[in-house]
Length: 256
Image (cartoon, rainbow, N blue to C red; front, side):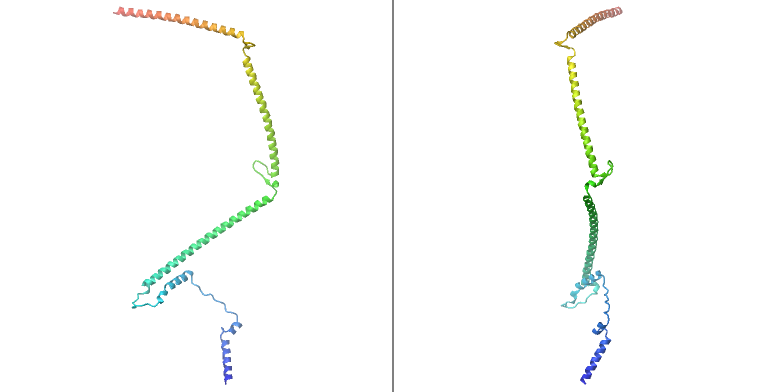
């Protein structure tokens, strides 16, 4: 009887395993069931619930003394304090999250700006390296005053211009020295002619002395003649004044 009972038990056990899809045999035969992700609450709600639960653990502690009649939960100071702390924690979390988001945006902006500047600098460095790598004598350059040509051509033209300018400076220096010599000769000739004018071999000539004496005599004669004329005018004026005075006196005496 015992073996039969054991066989029934084994058969019923095997049948039970076939009916239950969650047994090891079912898991081995079938594909694993897809995992369903549980719906997660928002982070703010989860944080609020955690703060609320952590502040409410003190209610589970045993209380001593007489049990008083408790007011409704909404008017309980402990509940209000717990709610206030929970709201404050949620506000701090929201503020910190907002600041972190702003900081993240700023960091991303700075990263983008740095990336743009790095790209621009890299491009300039690549261009500069290309210019340095290219032979300088073969580099083309142009401007408003000069035609487009290589640096070697411009340097050769510059050397020619410098040589021509040096020759021009030498020519102008020679002309300047010649002008200075001509000016010095002219001044010497002028001084010599000025010193020799009116002078003989032994000083002032006789003609000059004679002319000077004649000029002095003529001037003396003119001065004497004018002085004599002035004396005559003075005598005539005095005589007329005296006659006019006597006539006025005679007229006054006749009226008296």
